[in-house]
Image (cartoon, each protein chain N blue to C red):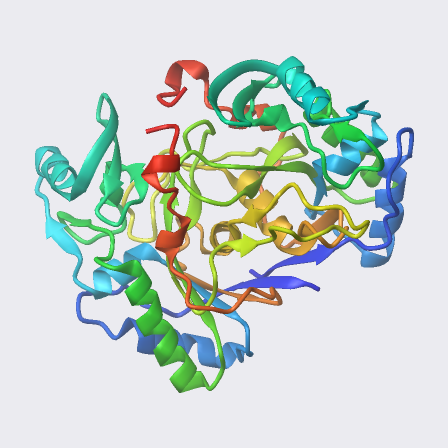
Length: 230
Length: 230
């Protein structure tokens, strides 16, 4: 089983109201996606197409929007705020982003990224005649590790967690690792081709056999009652 | 740029003293690796080849080894212990693993995974005549997200963090995301083919242009002074 990750090229700068799903569908068509492929879309183009942006003339305005978008604040250190978003994600600055945006605009997270992923998937499946999964990604830090990685904030058409409870390995022994966050692994894999400076907003992942189903990225949020690090 | 991830097949069950680097080299040879490819090796085969195992007849013996291997304990909840390993990694149970091992043995983390990666890389480069990077991975949990993902615990031949500080995007704007944990993203990507139940201990990642250099996985550890979640 070989997994391939291909960048989607030719997507122009996205503005509010753009038919992003249609543009993704058009860019995918020459790549000949097949049943079971996964389209990974970076958050910023989804937010911009949905108009999830706000004017912010300066740092103070940006900070104000971060506070408004944060459902809760876990830690503060200097200008860094570790927040819980209204979706339940734990990330810096409530996911509000300043880069890659025209003028003095900041980009919020999509209002409901699982729903955004669902809409894109339905359009792709209709246009392209294949069964796909869609993952919307954002770039998050981690508590104990340096550097950022892409993770799934929206999922459609697959289960984001591979449940191996009760599975055995090739020697018949029960596996110790029981739940694998495959949607986050696919998100991380896709970042290798979307990158930050390249202007590639999406990638097509082929060859990975995911569990189909009605999963959501919010399934990836550790319930606060089980969270030892808030 | 297309990234491909291919499983290494034909590696037998590894025992202490096995020439793992030689076996990986042999398995890689028919895959025709080229300059810049990355070999990702899962931790367990490295530990087993290095003899980093301990007898543990029962749960109490396992728990005792976890306490011995932990440099510090961050949290306890029931049988779950979140630890700092002697290398500085934050993970459950000091990285001591019970699955996939013959008899009543547990598997520790390699003593120095960066060094293990370095040794494997030198052997591959000598045998195969190509310039490669090597990443050794283990499966870690995250503070706020459900499910486990593979991360880098050993690195050789590349920088594990892509430093974009001062870089601009395609519109000339300074990027907000400045440090990407690419070694962790590659580790996560490789897990899509190594899996847990498949007995595939390694994967070859091709087509990703990493920054070469004398990096280490310990570079990925957030310094305790910057860590807000200990």
